[in-house]
Image (cartoon, rainbow, N blue to C red; front, top):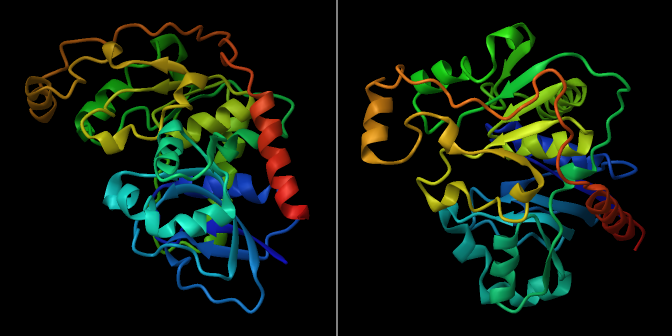
Length: 314
């Protein structure tokens, strides 16, 4: 039987491809790259075993996957955006899910959704936690990977991004956006870009990010990472992915950033650029020699690898 991973032709978030790169590295080969939004209509001459992980989905009407797909649901997240939680977690798909249970869920919220319709589910966490660091030495780079969510104004993001790291260490800083602007990029380019980013994270001295699929790979790669949990509370859909994952990180909360709340007053201050009189509350970080990440993920990593290996050989 063929082996496959998910592809994301229309995605602007390289974090999607990072998840599929992690899946691909657990397989002896990849025969098929299957569009997340085209799984329902897919017709193949030969069936494919698909590592079905990641965020689902932009087009929830394009569900469930076609009979050509034999899925391993692992590190699976159902968003409450686009009505996906109502359309995918539906009793009309109960027989389908029963054939493939237990469902490995990336977060506890997704686990509860499946359990609410009588489907067996467990917290698998994320396949990006299986990534391995192939480098033996680190550079001195402090990577700021989208340290602020894009629902903050551009001016606010740019101003406080420059304030996060003490002046003494600014020559070590590199700023990265984990966002794609060339939507016409080929699948090969997309996956190569994701692999290149993983390598940059693997070699870095430290990473500060608001991107969950920057922070999770860093845990796997042993790179000290600080997750900025700020700006996620304006809509439920912004933080529905974190329960069961955020506990693994060193977390930087909104209290460190002036006027970052979702109050009307703070929103107006950001919109009108009335915030520059305040400095960031100093972060509890050893900039010279960052502390290791707080949780040993080796058991999680090994369990994920074992589950995928068993699926392949069945």
